[in-house]
Length: 505
Image 1 (cartoon, one colour):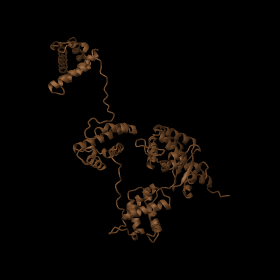
Image 2 (spheres, rainbow, N blue to C red):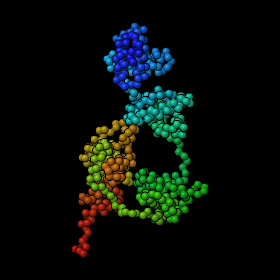
Image 3 (cartoon, one colour):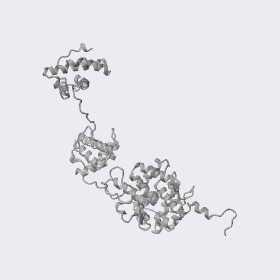
Image 4 (cartoon, rainbow, N blue to C red):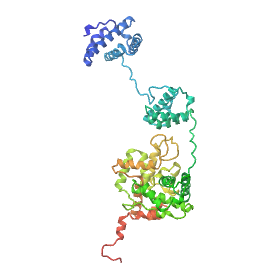
């Protein structure tokens, strides 16, 4: 086959070797012939330019391919298709140096950029990296910005047209159009943050609040009373509003006013039965507690004439309401799972399992609450009481290990931050979620942070600690709550019982 290809020029001495190399490579015969013809034409082009083998390199091959593209008017002429194969032979023969590897990684910058924001996208990628965003998040946010720029380009908009209203229109178009990108609704928040930092956008102004409805006004007044008079935390107030709020909606009359006279035992129990349908027993107990609290407030503020709260039926209970702790082996399994996931998770587990803190108390802990010199720290417990607790050596060591790797660019002084940007403090649910994930990883099923708190209290009582000590550690404002933990110490209770037939002395 090599004899059928005539080749002149400096590469003629390599035609036979190229033919053998192509045969060993296992290529199709037709493709091999076309490659040899492209090789021969390239050799003739070199001869016309009086070039020798010493002049051959990768740049010369690229120059020839470019000229062939211009001559033929095609982006993929024969030289473009087959000379790269011949180049591999020339590299293998030592005639041409191998080209340096070209990375296809663009560092998160989209390939096709158009529109007024095209020049800002690479800068935004750099900004996101400096902020500590993960590579996958950087790529996703940059793609959302590229789609925004292309969307603006189609509508002939400029950078001066960028506004918060424009971003809202873009999100609507991305989530309702024929080609949808639902992730834009989430990623536009970070794009907005960058445009604001760059000065393209002003600060985002929260839309003015809608006129307060009678139901919202009553709920606000009830919530303020719970915070001021009962010392209940904001999270509990929000939870009780969610359960009891629809009851107030049912008291509205035709003219939009609240008629508290409709709040009698029958109407309240009908609401509780309907609202609690489909929920667990624990959720129904929360519902009853919220409605009773609302009715007690209404009676205390003279909105209703009778104390209706006592007539609200309690949800049935299928089990005793004793605090359930964990066995030492289960606590060790959760701690072992935390050790494998990182210093932050281990510090969270140590704070709860050793000090019995609530998830909200761990979430509210700030760097200023830790007194390293005196070996103690303060937390805000229920009801808004500031408690001072000792800092055990193992808890302090776990905290130090985490603080050494804690992101230094956090947006607040919270001790425990999110694992991904933005570096904001974790909330109550985030702390409890850490324990739940670790318990699942340890094969213990569904266990939340409060089970670890119960474990600490049960261990204090079982070890001979007094209820006053347990109450002080747990931060209970009422002694009757702490008494429940005495009922879990079965060994001590068994010593107080008498065998059958024996009379007390």
